Amino acid sequence: MAVDSSLSSPLGPPACEKDAKALRFIEEMTRNADTVQENLLAEILRRNAETEYLRRFNLGGATDRDTFKSKLPIITYEDLQPEIQRIADGDRSPILSAHPISEFLTSSGTSAGERKLMPTIQEELDRRQLLYSLLMPVMNLYVPGLDKGKGLYFLFVKSETKTPGGLPARPVLTSYYKSDKFRSRPYDPYNVYTSPNEAILCPDSFQSMYSQMLCGLLDRLSVLRVGAVFASGLLRAIRFLQLHWSRLANDIESGSLDSEITDPSIRQCMSDILKPDQHLAEFIRQECETENWEGIITRIWPNTKYLDVIVTGAMAQYIPTLEYYSGGLPMACTMYASSECYFGLNLNPMSKPCEVSYTIMPNMAYFEFIPLGGSKAVELVDVKIGKEYELVVTTYAGLCRYRVGDILRVTGFHNSAPQFHFVRRKNVLLSIDSDKTDESELQKAVENASKLLLKECSTRVAEYTSYADTSTIPGHYVLYWELSLRDGERQPSHDTLSRCCLEMEESLNSVYRQCRVADNSVGPLEIRVVRNGTFEELMDYAISRGASINQYKVPRCVNFTPIVELLDSRVVSAHFSPALPHWTPERRRR
Image (cartoon, rainbow, N blue to C red; front, side, top):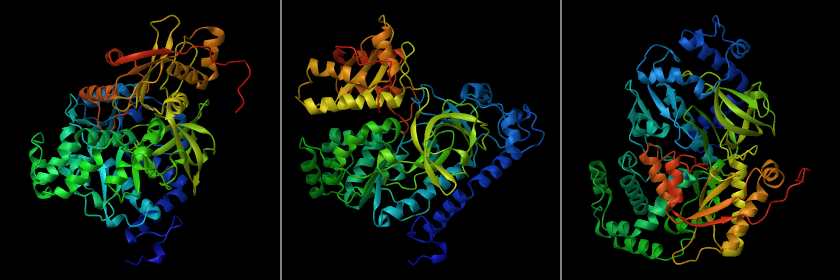
């Protein structure tokens, strides 16, 4: 279909008229970012002027930014918790928002260690849907022909809970998948999934995964992209295939669904999809029964053009494994969102994972940014390239100057809207004494030690977490490692793993090394190797306690006693750093 040239975009030539309008909307919003932000804040303040929360600060009807910032404090979840609890308990008065709170969106159970309730209103679903509608028009600029096939996406819901006052409390993706926006979405040739809604909406994670994988295998030649929310979720799907390919092949050969799949809606929809196919069954067996799974994604789904997964932040550790299973396919990180708010999208989705930057869409919320080491928040358009900031949001649902807890680095601008690289979650730390190790530092240390492991033993760190063990004097860092070992393969030697401990210590910051060398306030770092499958058990435990399978991320630090006990019960060997790391009062050269 010819595209009207008047609707073309500086971003590139659109694939269709619908895409052209979406791209023009992105241009309009980003060119006028400051005006959009000013008007959006004024609208939020007018609408919520009579809420209990805003009336406390005596705005006197003012809707300008200067008055707003001079009278309202920047807050954390703990500051707002009493109001949130009242709403959860059933208070329907306009406490935070003039519009009724429709539900609570639960944050990831492993983000900063606690599960939070984020109030939302019905119209926020429209804003989230709007951001979703912009993703494929951008992707189509980089990957042509996506309307000629399907996406194999492993998407899951969690059974929702109710607050004491009767409001739903569920992860943001569960809310979206259960909404009419998703379930009754109009046909879009650029957004066709192999998984039927019945499989995605099944609350039983095994049955959901099984049926989604089965549909993906049946439609394997139509698959043009493979994805999940997080990289860890896609690897879990690959692991599922490793464990269950024989059963899946049997279903394909016989044309009948495994008896363990009991969900009536799945069985009904699969009866129309699943037909006997001996040739495909034999192909699956041939590919999966070998020990070599390198490139398995492109072997089974040969037309796959890219992986659609989040591989930024803590998910970066999965990049080598995804490259192994995919044969080096590009990895697209398309959007930046949280339970509090959807923020923006990646205008260059095929960039390398280490170069991913998200463009903040100024129509999503009112954004402020606190410079690291500073206290005064700056406007969206006033951030500086190369500087790092903590994100603060004000939303229609009633969050006012709320610290999200994400640390972002400015990488550039698209028109007047800044682009950010996600650095880390704030306050995910290991600390024994005056040392403080954040998630990105820990990730880098594990990567460096893993290189040593790979060089000497051809073995990788498959998963890890950490623990500040203060039961010893002095306390010390403990790293729990699950290694990527094939059946029958021997574990690396004690000497190698001990040197991995030292390699990690050499990679940590100077304060840590000073504590080790000069202050003797931190003991030698310890690696405890756990048996294969331990981190699967850890996830199952988290899900049993209410974590969302969609949002689950392996916690990089643990301190909850049952989790530590679970990990310790799976330890097969322990190793300590054999020497002190290098430290001098002078700064290391970079």
